[in-house]
Length: 623
Image (cartoon, rainbow, N blue to C red; front, side):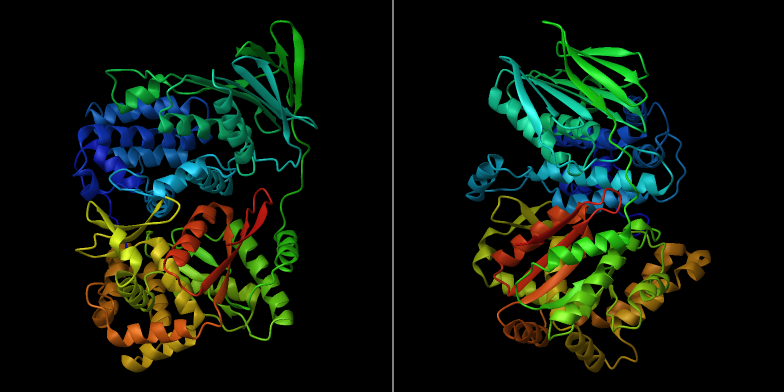
């Protein structure tokens, strides 16, 4: 469980930023050569720019100037707090308050953005290379899109007016207008136009495809920024120029343009290299124009623009803002989710997690949509299954500074689900941790054990697609469970929650269930503020968890817990199938969980309904 001081060791600016906003903690960066550290810092800075640009066209440059001043000591401000201020508010005004986005970024990064730095891929690299030629977004780019979704969602929920993705089924049509120039725009009601200049046609088409794929999650302007960061991360050996013109009802006409040169800018530090290559983000008022890649974009009104080719002169696209759509209603998402799940023909579903909240957040539209979908699916499954579905909502109290109490969250869930049986699970749960320990013993006795790797003090397992799963952070110390590994153990618990709960209650002679007592301690958080706030609450919780220390040490597995886990898994017929209802920024995480289940040969099947309460996107993933 994190404290207010977690990831906040004071060393040097580069390492402090990486520890607070990436998977590279201080123990890891202490072992990195200077060149690798500089490269990782540049990658992080570009990703932060893509997020901070949500606050306005000029904010990224101001952010980098402020960061440079702070890193060199010219301004006495902590670089982590400064980055958080720009992420949260788009200014350098440091408040000292906890940053929700900082907590989200470091948590997500440790789950799905581990990268390859300091890790070995071996034969699995061939699978990764095949993936690059597939029709799937590269994981690093998909993860960046998920981070943008999270940041945009948080800002909108705080009252910011931002353009939203328009889920259009019409594909864009490509035009090869020169030997090194490709353009594209939708054929019906076009709201954007893109141009890519590169001497390699394959790369032009790759960028165009990736932008189109990103539009399922991002606006065209956001996608252009994500591609800018991703392009530099790839370190291509050829120059690329990309520009997007977007028209929307919120900001009018926006043009995002950037150029990549493989030679880079020698002699500049990471922040300088990013500053030198920032995308140009331009909002065009009616009547204004700008020229990009031999084409002129002119704003012709508050919500319209034309794109004209310079030679020979001709209009190539007439853009207009998408028609206004009604706000997404949770009930509509629930109806569509039932339609999707109706096609499911697999084994009966054992459990459903339709409530998943980070306790540093307020209850919001994402939670409203998730429980509405979950309640509808629960009713549908009750009518078609012989086996009742166990409701297993989960609260992340492990990677956040707790603000929302479990008591409040339980009341919120009851308003929608009513009095149905429910297992409300804390992510810090010693029951899940004990299952993790048993699962780790199973792993060490299996074929994949020979591929375990260390980076810094952390332990990783390569997956078959060339990516990695963090098993434990600080394996020789606190041995904090990695999120994907935790999810695998959570699914085992969800296969027989009553049995695991009863075992712990009987073995430790408890007056109340483990999760109920933990939730009660966390619900005293408000009353603990005067006596140390979050850290005092966590101290009380850790004191309670010490009574289970004999079963939660990964270096000393308990034979009784191991036997219980093995017995539960042996009861699968042929698998335990579970249903999750999660926001669509969890897609990569859920893919990682399925990959781990396959690699460990666990009799578990994970079906996920992904939704976006802002755009109305809904998808069913199974396998």
